[in-house]
Length: 159
Image 1: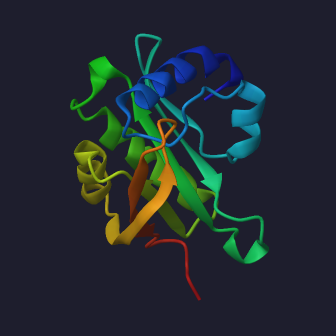
Image 2: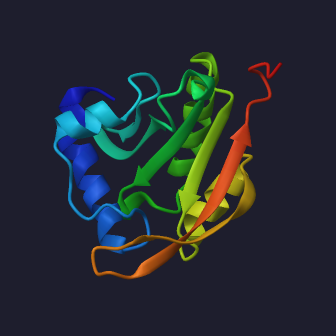
């Protein structure tokens, strides 16, 4: 992903926000804010004929050095490309990139009604850890649960 991809990336992100079950975010951040919140490495786009179909990126879970190898996943696919295997291919690339960058744990928080995301995470080796009940509110004031998923690297040594 390059900074020039932001227009397409933000459009896909906005589509995800519109579903009501992809993120707690309700307003599109500026590129500067999004850039500051995401790890510089491990930013990927899926393209076909120069059209961006989806994107993935990592965010640090903490500023504490002991969590330096733990990141939270963001993965979004445009409406027309969902269910066609793009997310799975993008996720496999993200996992490989994350391990090259030294990440040993990837985690995701998923709304319970986002069945496609849950299935995708399970297909690429994430396991369900538990549920955080009423962990946040939507812009409409509705409390939402969040399902926690985690993938531990098989190649980055955990000593």
